[in-house]
Image 1 (cartoon, rainbow over the protein chains, first blue to last red):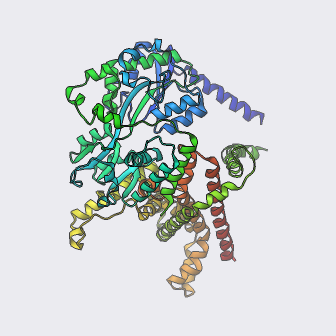
Image 2: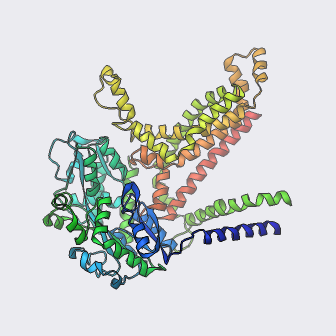
Image 3: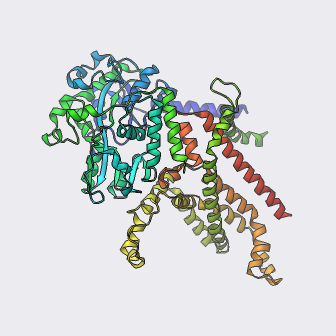
Length: 357
Length: 273
């Protein structure tokens, strides 16, 4: 027995020895960046410029890049794992939730001077971070309707088309409660952040009635399915939709006249980061116009960065689908963090939709 | 002493990864948020009786298909030469070298409205021949879920059956023939009783994962009708997790499966007698 323990100990010590001496180069620090998968940053995949490498060379700080596929998955890691990550990029409502649960560090904006100069004013002090102490906007976009012109001959300008029996078995919907309810809420004229249970119940009835028209509930798969013409209409994100239209010229994209969901992601530093100053330097680096432009090109989403916006070509700047008019943006709404009671209620109704025949 | 020491890694593994999580499941299933004892979660889980029924129905259909397809397959393989056996078994294992998710995505491509199967049928003029104007609706149906289950879990049926059948001596079959058994009676009186342990193993190994799957129903079923695995998934991993209901559902599923297995064990012993 003793023998076994000593073997194990030898193995463990050998392993840690190699782990510690494994990297030959000496870095000032190591930053762990936790971002959306996808790719959601110009990080070297698909022949893009590797901004992380540029940062490593410029500041001699090692970047470890990790990805997640949903706000909730990232949240679970931050909530349980504590201080492991230095930089995260959550969406608006998740930023609010992390702030509320005291899981974010306050940023020292003297290390992020480009925030003041490069971030457009309308993206400062947003609802999810009213005093703008915890976050730096990274990207934004709108949800809209992708449709196939071969299969949909009429003009598309309302979410109501997602309920049209003509397109039975030809409609794809988002497969998560918050996004799906937002569509119904917008159509019925309610706030996407409503906490009125009667209104939510009404949206539930609406979504339940839609079930016969819906071919399937999906998230990322919508991209492939629409390109392959496996469905006629779907809800999706503007940035991706433009890429899809390049892949299949029968596809078109439209914004519903009722308004829609406006989403935004922002840099944050989770509580307990050991390299907060370097993390802030990293955020500042990503705010440089050229870098923000590269990121916006890779993600396909809009940039809140004025320096990057100036560098865009005229065609993109004037593209109503990419950068819609001020008037239309006024009709749009962003998610804020809702009380747990409401979220549970919505999730419960969502489960009902998916379990009732 | 030495032999016992060898078992330690497995015992530690089982305790850490099977017993401890099971204790958590039990704890969450029987406690309220404040930690006090309650049975209310079981009442709340009652509304999902329909989901249980659907999951078990689909798993049962998939298991029967696997058995009907896998049994003759395993028998045929077990009667071939040694080298052919090895080759055929490897071919059956081959798909399992690929990632489970990837295989399921491949079926999406096949079954889509504009997918490979529909496109081939159309190109061959079969639709025109039969006067079909719309492509076949395959994806996002219960049929697609069953196909996904059968495809993914068929090897788990064939391998245990083959392992048992390869041990059945050919002379037993010859002897029964000599004694006047026809083909059907050879199967009923010799082959079937001798292969019962393999059948039970195979059924268990197909039924259990099929009853608890969630990827297949989401990707091939369009997430329109949840299976019990989807419910457990949303209660543990969704935006508003509720470990209590998730645990209760897991526990009920485990109980149903245990009862099924005990029932099969019973009939196994009866056949043996």
